[in-house]
Length: 272
Image 1 (cartoon, rainbow, N blue to C red):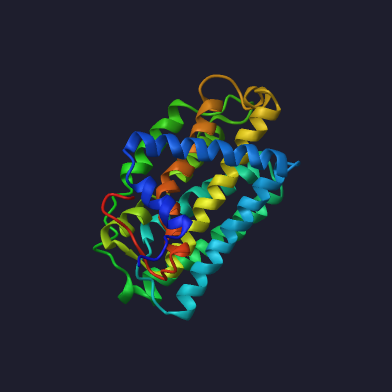
Image 2: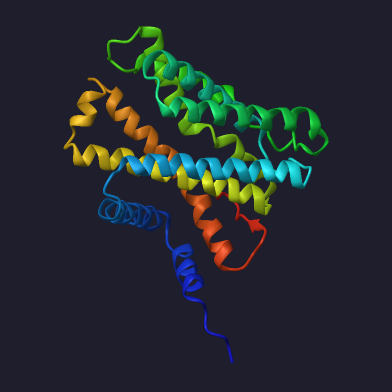
């Protein structure tokens, strides 16, 4: 007699069988439902941004633990870490000259740990670095982000160069995880610590996106006006949404793998 399927397995099987348009619709509906839930649960939406920073820190802690405990950087993208260091360094500069606050200290700590991860991959653990799998050309994202920042940037009273830098770090952050996804696409198998790290990034970016969306809704669009005029306010929101959707597919398979009791995440072809 066949054992009954677990509810999560039955749902994942049904979703997997649906055409791409249905999957996209379900993803949008799920995201909207999560936003509605957060709106009623979290009264101060600034807490969502703090939670996003906290989850990101947890993800970095998992990454550091992996490097120190297992003495290997297999499955990690050096290029993704370098892109992260670039946008953090630019954002840190903008934060110092434009709006020095607690987030400046958080960015400084995150940049320091990211640079340490880069050092470990480049020197101490170089032998385990999968350079052939980490084949994403970073100029494919750096150059378009720079051009986009020149064309669309804040219209505030700050120096024009600072405004362009601010826009550049917003755009680059949205796509900085792409090299890491390419590595996972090439290997098809993601070991636990790397999977935990990328999932933490996905959760952090969803919380950050939820923070911005709910702030816009609660202010009835006044927040977008405060950010300036032209296309820039919309691009900020779009960048947050792009960050979330880039990792949405991976997060789905991560949750499915966890509920299925699998320690190693195996990705089907074409997932990321």
